[in-house]
Image (tube, rainbow, N blue to C red; front, side):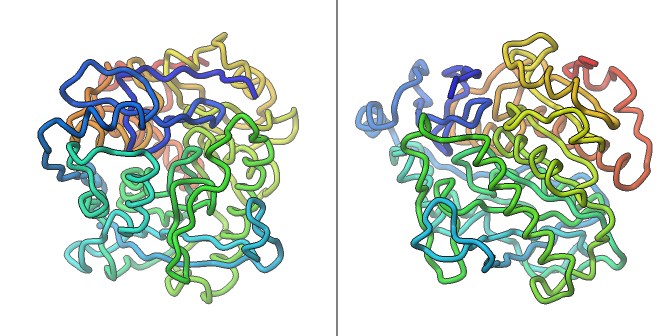
Length: 402
């Protein structure tokens, strides 16, 4: 599989795999005090371990909407199919974080992830203790989501989120909490055996089964498999209240999906296979597979880096997909953004003392939230936003490609 994305060394942080636009990943690390050089984590960890230990207190940006963000973890088992990556494990098991509009001041602060999930990240990326990023500090990142929060009344559109290849579902938490604060129910879908670890119903947190040899991965097949995960989650959330006690909050007729990197490819693949997904967002991911004319006649937003996804750029799948799309569509790029400007990673990278790219991590979060929310407001709620009409003086980094 051809690599069609290059990640700068400045953007490299080993909190998660550095993932190309195709979803290919490689572990790398930089040290806060040294000139960053992209390398394998095990090559630099011993030297970095001699540096003074930092204190890491991660905090994601607070949601911007009128509601609080409630959170609940659910575990689902798809008895209709074996796990595609480890068939010997039995039926496909999924962990999903549900984030929903909640009453402010209710509930208790939700952890970012389990300690076991955080351990999977720190061990896989060989993070030196000098960074201050430990399983305990990583799991304790402030998310502004609240366990047991009282839900807002009414029904709300459902948005499903899929993270980058090798990245656990939590890496899109800042987007999830903001969408919930603006009146969306959000499902962060963990794709078991495809990342550093998702804690399952039995308490086990299995490691990635396909990450060590990305050159052998069929990314079309992985994106399609993720689409099956998402369709199953939709089934479970819209057929009664057995899978989630708050399923009555969901407007089953207004469903969207957004994804980052390979998750963006999965959003398009899901739309091809499942007409219930009425609108989709691909954040800086190559299309796998590339949609054919007539396959997606519903709204799609393409939001990527200006370096890698302009019209005529080296990722030819974006031009091919654009020509095939039949519904409302927007192609936007963000000047100065790197691949992880659309996830939590750059914010946590900066807070851990690693150098940031040209676009500040906070601006990356603001832009991602504003444009994804505006897109779903228009396509799922029928609310017009001038953000999507053309360039905005408040967001000069956002370039309208078409």
